[in-house]
Image (cartoon, rainbow, N blue to C red; front, top):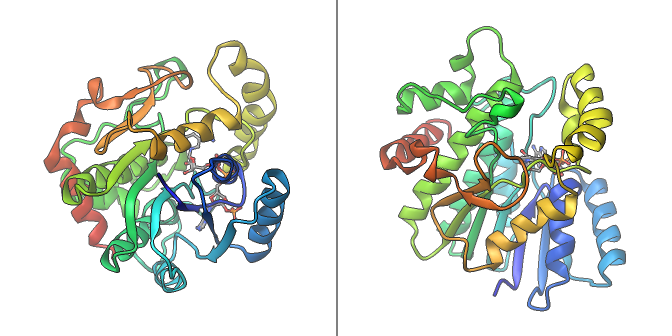
Length: 306
Ligand SMILES: NC(=O)c1ccc[n+]([C@@H]2O[C@H](COP(=O)([O-])OP(=O)(O)OC[C@H]3O[C@@H](n4cnc5c(N)ncnc54)[C@H](OP(=O)(O)O)[C@@H]3O)[C@@H](O)[C@H]2O)c1
């Protein structure tokens, strides 16, 4: 039973819809909306209160790509949290390849840095009680039908992960669409290593699947954004059963923290080659996920930047 839940990137898209669904569960007493922008957070809080009729939302301001901002935010979290959903992220847009003070580029910092600090600081201060859900993507195992190749690191060594995080792995031509899967692979492996390190906390990794109704396409190059937002997502993909509604993607997160069938140390996403439908343990066909040395290498590489 999760009474207090924190969701990062909760002002829009999957994060906000997850907050709405969780608020409607009778056991939920408090939802912390962890957002980087005060006015967007307040607008989301107001909207959620109207939609749910519940006054259980609190705002904590923090930027997950900025280590100091997250450490400061943790100081503002006074009460223990039962479950945390590490949702903020995506492809970031034009500045994805730009270096942050941590030494990670913005893509990696946004999807990884702040989330790792947030979880580790909360654990250190005994403020995280039951569950962590790390958000990943089908971009990790790849989707053949769309020509999306699986993430294929040569050795998954600490150095190789570190190169993914600072962007040097990709040479001079940094393509966030390619790098995204590698960054999600790194955060997935970190979460799987944490599941072994902290067996009293459930660490589930979940992809929402290909989900419409979010701002994710807005971060793509203009031609790609147009094609995805106005053609593929609303018209072509639904015909192929390759996209689902916001409610469906967010329900995966709600179930991931609430339903006991989802086990710690497992990455759940759509069936092999799919982007929607039932979720399955990805390690049954993407076997690198089972390699504990690879998992620990991701953890060590991330800590080179913290
Ligand atoms: N939609 C999909 O099909 C899909 C598929 C697989 C995985 N995912 C993953 O699902 C998660 C949510 O994506 P979405 O589709 O809901 O995207 P979205 O609508 O763009 O929402 C992203 C959220 O993250 C927040 N955010 C971004 N950078 C941040 C930062 N540095 N600090 C704090 N908050 C930050 C955004 O805040 P602002 O409003 O301030 O920008 C927003 O609230 C992401 O991790 C994404 O990679 C999505």
